[in-house]
Every structure is written in C-alpha cells, then in structure tokens.
Amino acid sequence: MLSISVKEFLFWKKTQLSKGGDHQSLALLLDSVCGISTSDLNLISINPEANLHIKKNLEFLESVWDYHLLNSCPIQYLCGITFWRDLKLKVTNKVLIPRPETELIVDIVFNIFRRKSEKLLFAELGTGSGAISIALALAYPLSNIVATDIDQYALEIANKNFINSSKQSNLKFYCGNWWSPLENFRGKLDLAISNPPYIPRDTYVKLPKEVKNFEPKVALLGGEDGLKHIREIIQKAPLFLKEKGWLILENHFDQGEKVKKILIENKFTSIEIMKDFSGIGRFTIGRYK
Ligand SMILES: C[S@@+](CC[C@H](N)C(=O)[O-])C[C@H]1O[C@@H](n2cnc3c(N)ncnc32)[C@H](O)[C@@H]1O
Image (cartoon, rainbow, N blue to C red; front, top):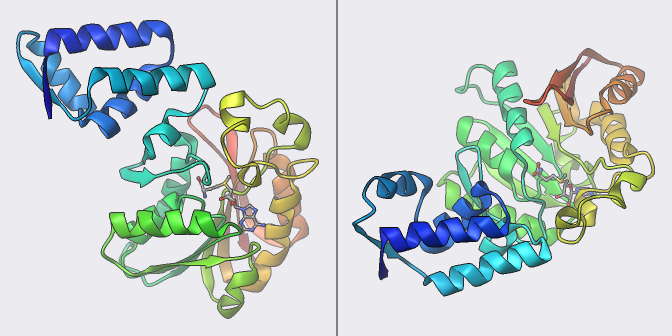
C-alpha cells in the first residue's frame, strides 16, 4: 500500500478527467486496480487534509487511463472486471461486457416467477460472462439453470464468475450452438432466456470503435437483418419449453415488432414488448401455448 495526501489524489483525479473519459470509467479503474470504491471517494473528499492508502501508484493508474483514452479500449477490459447488478464479474475481450440495460431482463423473470422458493428449470442461451445466469442462480437457489455458449473460452470465464459469486452448484455450463447442447432438457424448461447477437450487418460495420475493435464479433453480429439468431432460437424453443413455458429475448431497439411476429408464427401467446430505462422496446417475451 502507498500513502498519498487526499489533496494530491483529488487533483490527480481532476487532471485525468480533464483529458477525457467519464466518471464511471475512472471510478471502475480506481475501485478495481487501486482499491478505492465510490463510497470511499465520497468519504475522503470531506477531509482533504488526510492521507489515503492506494494499492498502485498514480503513474501506473495514469498509464492505464491514457491507454483507455488513446485506444478507446473499454476500461472494463483493461481492469479485467465489471459491475453488473450486484455482481462483480471478471471480463476479458472474449466476452461481451454485460450492459446496464440487460440488468432488467432479470427483473422480468422476477415478475413472472415470484416465488423464489420454487424448484424450476431455466436455460440461458449465449451466456457470455454468465451475468444473467449467475443472477438467476443466486436469486432462485432451489432452481437449476443450464447455460450455453458457442465459445468455450467465454464459458470458462462464466464458470469462474459463478464460482466467485456463489457456493451453490445450481448452474451448469454447456458449449455448443444455441439449443444443441440441451437435448437432455427437451420439454422440461420453465423458462428460456437469451440476449443473442442481434446487430444487423450494416449497423455492425458502423459501431463505435470501442465496441467494434474490442468486443467479440460473435457476441454482436446477428446476420444481415440482425434476426438470424433470434429466428433460430424462437423456432426451436417449442421443443425445449414445457407447456406454458416462457421465452424472454433481448433485441435491438427497433426489432420488437419483428420479434413479436416471429413468436406469433411459432405459436407463442401472451406476447409483450417490454421497455428498458430509455423507453426502448428492448425485450420481447412470450409463452409457448
Ligand atoms: C450479446 S452476447 C450476450 C452475453 C450475455 N448473455 C450478456 O447478456 O451480457 C451473445 C452471446 O451469445 C454467444 N453466441 C453467439 N452465437 C452463438 C451460438 N450460435 N450458439 C450459442 N451461443 C452463441 C456469444 O458467444 C455471446 O456470448
């Protein structure tokens, strides 16, 4: 641990932000690399005459911050962690950084399955860092969750995140294309949930460089119209869901009505397009018959 004055630290912080970037990214850097949380920051600001203990020196922190600004590399990848809901998750450039808007998908599940003590079977398709599945495994300790991803490396990260977040064993990971690793669960699922790659090709090529140059293409690109994976997931869902089982999908800002149509074509009922915090129809949900 290194000791510096609060005054010097606050001046350093202000200087870094004046170069660019946002408060949240700097807060993540300070928390993960330096051991100073946002609440620590609020507390120390009250007493500028005090001293502060930091894990890494300011030169090192500044070099990471400069790299982030110069290369548009997401700070989460440089720090190797992100915060999502109440989870602290390991992330590398092999997994998508879970987005704040996706946090709501877990609340949709909470609204459908209100009794946390029920014994249910959930599946997540395309788990990435494991964020959604881990949140569900923690919230429904008596239920089982099976999560898939096409990328074995992503599953290793997801598994590490689960071990770091829970002592339970109610979440299992399987590698393969969407439903294919879940043959043993045909007709048994109460719920399937997915935030699949849904960016249309012409939008993908224009994505900001902090996304396109760093986050995995396999996690973002949804074919020509963005709906390639959503179609495949919906078409096969009836084989795996129980009667009246639920399917919850995240989609691109303008895809809600199209996803609704695909759900209707595949005999889903109780279809709803649900909005995120920005008022965008971000999630489309339905029930199989
Ligand atoms: C948009 S990311 C979502 C990651 C995570 N669930 C989240 O919400 O942050 C989509 C995930 O689907 C996975 N994926 C892409 N194609 C797949 C396929 N054919 N079968 C299974 N998973 C796939 C990607 O590797 C990626 O982890």
